[in-house]
Amino acid sequence: MTILDAPSRVEEAATGLAAAGAHLVLHVTGQGTPAGHPVVPVVKLSGDADTLAAVPDDIDLDAREADADDLESLLLAVADGDRACAERHGLTEFAIARAGPST
Image 1 (spheres, rainbow, N blue to C red):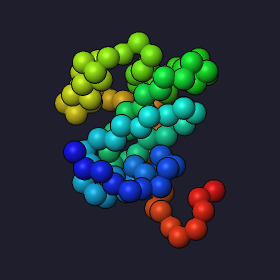
Image 2 (cartoon, one colour; image 1 turned 90 degrees about the horizontal axis):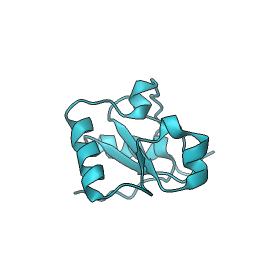
Image 3 (cartoon, rainbow, N blue to C red; image 1 turned 45 degrees about the vertical axis):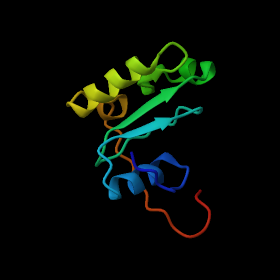
């Protein structure tokens, strides 16, 4: 496991992680941001009931009902070629972190 100090926006964070060599990004979201990345799959999970109700097709795993085995199975499946929700929807956003606030 590698830990990377990256911006909080998923587009910038995934770009930083991909540039650092990540093969998969696990994005824990409370807002359900519908974002993917063109280089690495972005697997999204949430435990927020409002988010899960608002964007159920954009979340790969409901953390309220999943355990570690469910998460491991999902990550292994995506690493083996299954497509994450963002990939299935064609979401391929990216951004490069810069000095100053992100808007």
